[in-house]
Image (cartoon, rainbow, N blue to C red; front, side, top):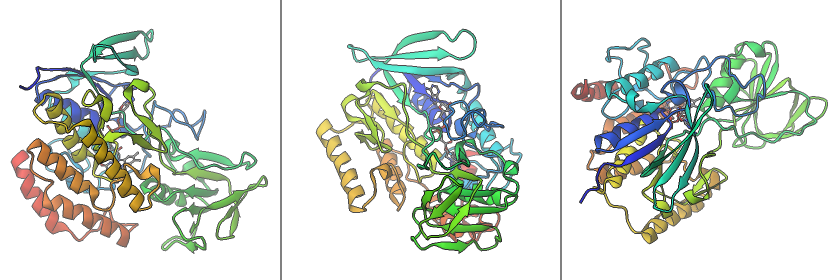
Length: 441
Ligand code: FAD
């Protein structure tokens, strides 16, 4: 028999928390969403200037997201949206109709989503979860703190907790010797290029942020040098279409006179090192009774990257995988968690779940991936995973056009790194997507 409606705590009202809230309520549960910001949207709430930048340009600041002013999506909008709520230019409230819109448009979309599915009433804004503890009866005590005002703490009991706190706000930094005298900053605190006028800037990293930010800064800087640890050691290449940007292998060492030496042997006196080196998973509100540990960005042990095996299904995580299309994945994970919590969908035994986790680790080892790649879904795995979740939930698999469009975008990005957001060859897939969207509009 399905269990009765459960009282559930959801941590975060970004895209994952909104998807979770919708699916949990659709299943008949009673979610309460805790959000420390004053609005929904999480990552897509742009803050300028970054409040932490002045205090500690390398540091974390839970108070702001990691967006920069010029950011446009790196996925086409058709691919990016939730499965049954298309992120299409045909929606009523669209202001930036570009296929790869600016960040403001994504925030508008998430606000529309919250409005359309009547989620605002579920969210407690400016309320931070500071503790989650398992009680002896199996329920969870959630301690929250009201921000502003008097900072009062409150403790309430919930049947289960769904963690949707995101993983793009705790910077991971490369180690540079203290003696190096220049300025260092993490991309978390980067907003606009103007402060880098006429400077020599080293950008560490090869991720989407590193690519965007190096080009942004190159528009005003004297020189930009990208240090990419995956580039062959001998790499020292001027970048096509730029007379002031070079790609190098990783930094070998940095000296007290301001010189930075790359593994290729070239060196440069730089003013700034910009760390586009990613982020760390962080769950400061969870104690040992969560039964998970985070080591080198591996959250362990988690069944299907969602449930800590010992306390499943009472504690779950939505949105840990990366190198994915995030919103559809959040939606499917949320449907699965909602169905499991109500008893409609069954989890395997603890032993079977642990076998599955071991298989994930052995696949990682076969690929010679470091531990920090545990939740990296590149190489085609994301659609296998999405479709597995969909099958569990009795939901159709990810649409064929979306899979093809994701691949076409990756190909286009490699072929036209400077222009992929404005030039493409897959209009036939856009037409298929728009045809498909008609059923939701
Ligand atoms: P977040 O958006 O980070 O939301 C987490 C929420 O939890 C936040 O609102 C936070 O305030 C809240 N929270 C955290 N801890 C607590 C607590 N203790 N108590 C209460 N509230 C808490 N994705 C795409 O699909 N397309 C893109 O083009 C794209 N570009 C990106 C560019 C950048 C620079 C970054 C950083 C990410 C990008 N992403 C992109 C990924 C993006 O992060 C996801 O799309 C998605 O927004 C993540 O949603 P989330 O809900 O998991 O996390």
